Structure formats: C-alpha cells, structure tokens
Image (cartoon, rainbow, N blue to C red):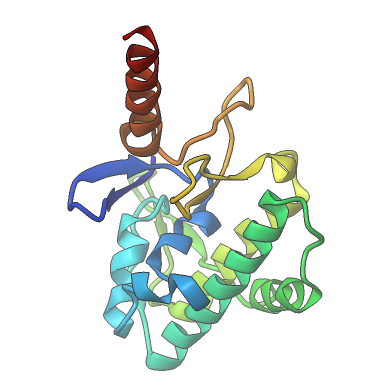
Length: 194
C-alpha cells in the first residue's frame, strides 16, 4: 500500500498515509498547500483513484463539478487531519462537509462470475467522494483516531495515521524524512566525537 511521491529534488519515495481518505491529501490543499495541486482536470481525479488503495481500480466518470466536490472534501480533510494531529478540536464546518459528502451514494461493489470483485459501472466522482468521506468518518471515529500524526521532520507537511503495532511512527517515510533524520543524527554524533 502507499503512494509514490517525489521529493523537491525529484527523488521518488513511498508514502503510506494509512487510510484512503489521507491518500487524497498529497494532491494539493488549502492555503499553503495549494502549490502542490495536481487535480487540474477531471481526468486527474480518475488517475488519483487508479493510484489509490481502492482495489480493483474503479472506472470513474468525472465532471468539472465532481472534481470541485473532491477538492472541497480534500480541503476539509486537510483541516480535520491537521487539527487531530495537533490535538485541536475538529472544526465543525469541516465535519459538516465530510458528513454531507458521506451521505451520498458510495461506490457499489459487485461480484463477477469468476468470483472476482469489481465496481458497478459507470461510477461517478460523487460516488468516489462519498466513499472517501465514509473512510474519513471511519478513521476519525475509529480506534486509530488518536494516532493521526504529522511527519516529525520540521519541513514536511505530510499527515498520516500510524497503524504500526507499537504506535511510534514519526516520519512520513523512512525512505525520505526518516532517512534524512538518521543521517543528520549520525553526522552530529561524528561531529561530537571529533
């Protein structure tokens, strides 16, 4: 599971935010996160769905209105996740936005003749948005709600849910921020010895 993201230097690394709803966050966001926007066209949301943890990949018909709804949900999820990660109360307006999105018809699973699983066609962006919002309801009201974290690197904005058994995950990715922290710590120890 997880997404392949690219650092500002262009180096790819795996990031597993731990939940479908949190996989939407690296696509952009409100305020300071707007510069990371990758959902420019309706087809971009379908590309995101194909890269997400939804399996099998749903075939999504996305309209401009559906894309706008997905972005509104994403922005609400940013604010909710950041509030939870920092121990602040959940903003009521964002909770209402998630609940409104979750009230819609979600993606509908179907069973194929061969025993495989799929999604009813055609699937719409509204169904995708509802499915993501329902995942957020489960996350924020479930057993991992208190394990929502922000990466421990001071210059990383990524948010995730720590699903590790001990519950001590600090980094968005050991390939990126965790490794950079280890290198800095090693250099600091070497400098102390010298």
